[in-house]
Image 1: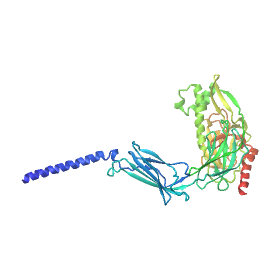
Image 2 (image 1 turned 45 degrees about the vertical axis):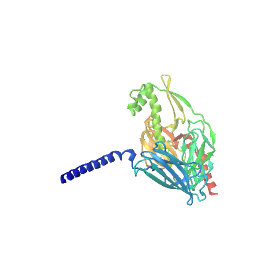
Image 3 (image 1 turned 180 degrees about the horizontal axis):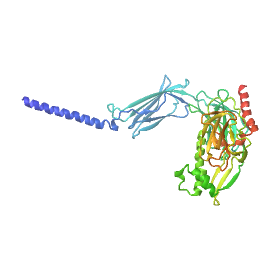
Image 4 (image 1 turned 30 degrees about the vertical axis):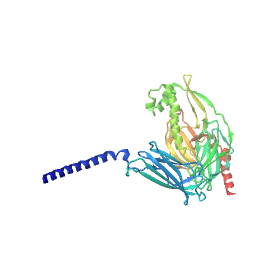
Length: 458
């Protein structure tokens, strides 16, 4: 009898071990499946929001498996209104909840609401109830558009040239302020003189037929104000020229520059090599310049007193800005490019002067520009010096007016010793002639700044 009981006990023990092993095996295999995942849905909702009540609030919600139900409530502190209830009949692991302002049921006069969003997934975890997430946000209602008022600007702007505008922009929840143009470029304004006022230098690219610019102010609630800046537009025609490329030029300078990109140029014909250096490589070099010269400091601007740029004493202009050059090889046009500066020449290794104070932002080799120096002068304005034989400063140096910063040379795509001089505004090349003309600078820059101060101080 005892032996039978012992036998039954042993069988029970074996069955119990097998049962435990089966449960462990089933748990490891099943509970780690997507059906039993443990992660709650992710609700992307900041703690505070601004809302103009016009556009719906968009709240992304994600889950590792699939969403089952989403609900959202708005409360004014006294009343609560359900503003969203979404059940998912089809499997979905991502959803963008759209919350519209309720027309009834809430008191919006206080300007503050509380939003509560809950989400449940289809997981069988938590005794088949699924994982749940809940998030809240405090909403500030703001239905007022930013105030924008153009104050004063340069009278005109010339194709390929620059202009200055000063304006007022105010909003307690201001988030973004920019100048939008018809050609896709956004210019960043600089704080000017007193709180709420801004100044911006604008550029009309030589390649664009038209120019228009608008101040665009956007607050945190999405309210947006646009105001057009007025300039008298002056069209200007620039010179076109055809350059015949000789074999000596291609086998010399072009081949030397091609060695900067051996993998891309080793199998090219002479004509293809010319086009690569003049077009593709030029674009790469200009991209380096534009990336550096796009930045604008946000220090408050009170004065912008610059002298006319005069980088090379007794320098003679040997090539003008805006020249649209077509390159021929064996009587066929191979490539084209715009000359985005002026070329000045005097004597070999002549001193290059900074003319105006600034900070060195680039001092390095840059392809067709050779040894290339760029100095920042504030308000998004940069001066550029190319083909230098030697650069006497380095990135980060502060230069004073009339410092000798480099010497002329023939590095890069240059056949003789000279200086390539450019002016850029927020990455756009503009006419150096304007910034070398004391009368233009007085009328379009200095007088505008002084006039704005008088208007603000009234």
